[in-house]
Length: 376
Image (cartoon, rainbow, N blue to C red):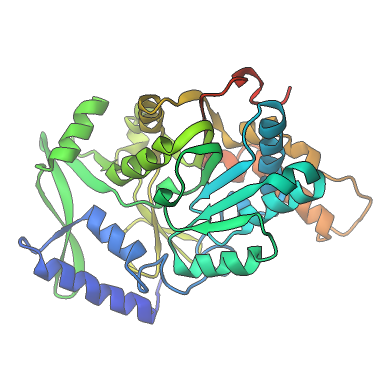
């Protein structure tokens, strides 16, 4: 693939060059590289004024494949509020362009006027580009409020959820090389970004490996999600009672040790093509990793959250009633609105479909009616 770098990408490369050359050892961690490439003000991928989601962007999310995903979540949220007595407050962390929030709010407005009148929906998002898109899309809803971080909402009673939030956070990269653990850094030579390895010395990484009892095979790469842990702790500690829902792709520790995952999971997405080299197209390409679900479960327990279950996404959607979104029709046109919508729904629930790589972690805190978390 030949790519023409945009102005933001050129500026980001210059920014990275300055970061590397000003560092004492002329290299930066993958964590710092990803943080700059994704979040540097005005020039990072998520901070830049560029369309990222959908056919004209670089990737899709479940919430952008029609409205059935959002309506299924909304149907479940209504159940939690009416049956489990959860407060009618919803916080979406990493709310992106607001499409999912819009679909959820439209469903509640159409079907539950009593809940609608008392509902609060907080969209948490750091990207200025996406925040502007949210406000343009959600301006009609007095129920919608906008925040930049978890510190802006505290002592939460209600529903907190994220959809593909943790996978976009920076990670450190380590490897076992000839029997010794090394950290992989990023440097620059003759204008090209390159990897360099040094003996692992970061105490936070070493502490994570000890805590998780991680043992690597030789030549195995492994991402250390210190930022994920930090952000999750902020979220979990702000919940007094309710539901914490995490939708993302990732593995538990046993799966991380399978040979198929020995090269790690750090990759890029550029114009809907997966790019194995994370150093290509900085600023113009999304970067992502698979998350560590067992870490979230353990950290949740430390913060008083109990794990209901880790579901496959299609399994979760079936439990929340997505089949109710299918509509009968007699149209012969396969490209009609109804036909396309039904295909999108089937694509979310059939084997090998959009949901195949996604999982849903449901955690609860101080709920009186945990047995009825899902409709029967």
